[in-house]
Amino acid sequence: MVPATKGRFPSARGGGDHDRGGVRPRRPAWNYYAAAGIEWYLLVEQETGTLHLHRRQGRHYREVSVTKPGSVLELTEPVRATIRPEDLVP
Image (cartoon, rainbow, N blue to C red):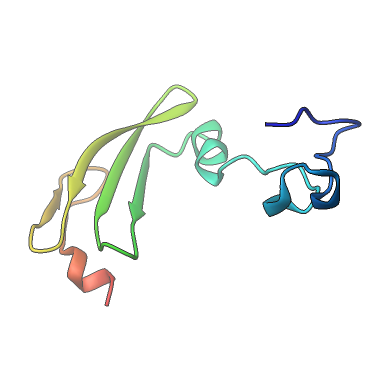
């Protein structure tokens, strides 16, 4: 990784991080959710249909469950719910 200069990544023409077009990468949204105290985070992988359930630990999340298509995610908190991955992703 090329070090940032003056708060920006070097441009693609300068041999830096071409995918970001010279803009500093943003923090992942879940870091903000954890900082705001949101206890649970459910990530749905659209490509595979896999569900990743995370629970907040301090300012970060820890994965507590992985549910693949054909299986069922049974939540007991923060609400009771039964989620089938194939119901969320076509």
